[in-house]
Image (tube, rainbow, N blue to C red; front, side):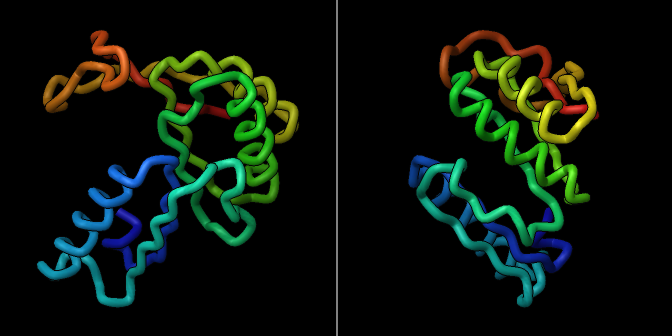
Length: 144
């Protein structure tokens, strides 16, 4: 979506495969004229805890809260960004670090945050967790 709006985007993942798929989709959309030539995508293999967030207008974190340690760090950084006035969108599929993220985020932003479970739409092509194969009926969306 950022690309379609002509924005630059930075994607970070610990695995190359999701980034390669994202690059392919971005380039195909650009070649088809759906993404303006001025839009840019930088895809890096790395640790999200080290992402350069200070200049971002919008920060999207999706399904990253795998453990409490990572979730606390991400919660603190995203809370600081929200406090600076940056727009943040955070989703969580029920990972084990959710509570640690909410605690760190709320402390950093200075007001309570919580995940509101939103039903996965019936039209979604895959309604199973890719990691454990369990049924996924809802995704948490951060509210604050």
